[in-house]
Length: 283
Ligand SMILES: [Zn+2]
Image 1 (cartoon, rainbow, N blue to C red):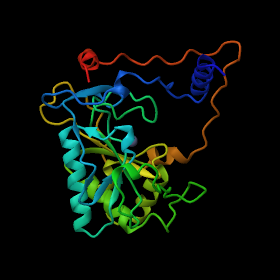
Image 2: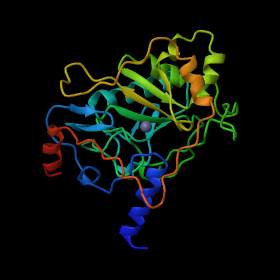
Image 3: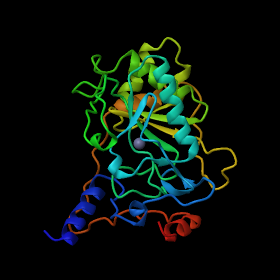
């Protein structure tokens, strides 16, 4: 099958699934280095970029970056500092090393696969696997065990995987002043709503699709970042309410478009103008 036909089918499948269509590798995913100058997140998490990003050191106390061939270990210096801080705190509490997955590309921007957000250097995926880990060089950490924390029915946590250590790590992350919100699987949040005696800290944990193997930390726009667009604030309360129950209600099946009239793929909003200059600058 030719590339065009494959792409056409992929786009069509994405439209059927109601997802944003994938994009081909762009100058954003091909950028090798961040731009110089002060760090500046531009735009929002799903429609932006970052100037002056910093690379996360691939190993640090309490954490290890994985899948480094993807070159998605860049972020705002505040995001790098957050990961390092979480690593130190986790280690001090006797937790095993955690894996750090995707942050942003060297200049942020849209990715050719895998995420709609992570575009402004303020997002980071932290994997729940807190088993003892072998000492591996970063390049040997492309394919490591990243198990789901849920039982096969995806309705409840698997108690052999998701326990006190994972909850402690989540709690440390949620208590960090730089954090705006953390996305976790609805079934994990529901279990915490039941098990946690004091639920105030659950406020920042937001239910979202997937996120049963990792949690996704989104930092708030740093002070003074004039071009950074914040999300609407997390609603008050612990979130153990109807908004969480919604995730477990049966959903009506999505209408299937007639084959003769394929829906047009959703257009992506244009990136902020300030990102254009970053994209054009030579890597
Ligand atoms: Zn993520």
